[in-house]
Amino acid sequence: KAGVTQTPRYLIKTRGQQVTLSCSPISGHRSVSWYQQTPGQGLQFLFEYFSETQRNKGNFPGRFSGRQFSNSRSEMNVSTLELGDSALYLCASSLFGTPENTIYFGEGSWLTVV
Amino acid sequence: AQKITQTQPGMFVQEKEAVTLDCTYDTSDPSYGLFWYKQPSSGEMIFLIYQGSYDQQNATEGRYSLNFQKARKSANLVISASQLGDSAMYFCAMREGKPSNTGKLIFGQGTTLQVKP
Image 1 (cartoon, each protein chain N blue to C red):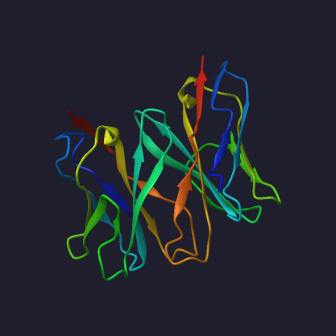
Image 2 (cartoon, rainbow over the protein chains, first blue to last red):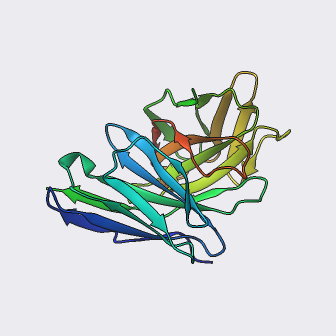
């Protein structure tokens, strides 16, 4: 069974550019969440999608956006990149309806903004 | 407000020995879930073990067990028979509310574990 797949794994962008990251959840999982991990702030929740609808949103500026497609794949976009956006972006998927609702993560996308 | 606290920034353990990683949490919701993840330097967040707030028994998964003390709001991870491959960052995380409601996690700051040969 394939795990959570994130692409690209590594990317370098210039300040002011925008970036799109992709996440394919585990087959059958309909919930996808995104997290930003930095050395200073740790792991912070960005947003969560379920059945193409945003269910939760973290405390991030509007430059951070996301969407989910009908096949549960998700993308997140960061516009007008700033140096502080350099981080590991992690995607997680889960299967609602089970008692534990275990949440599984992908390998992450390492974003460097120069 | 919900909060996860991991007070050990770094830990050392001798290979084949057991180690306990501490985690305390704060929530006013009677329904919550507690997770432990392992993050090697590659970045992937690997699920280790889960404990639900209503679970009567402590969770176990192979060499991992969770020492759940609800009244003290602690959920410590115990790794038995440490291996060199256990060297990584370990995160405790909490999900508030019923499992069916959300996939949002609150994370602690993590503990770096180094296993010595």
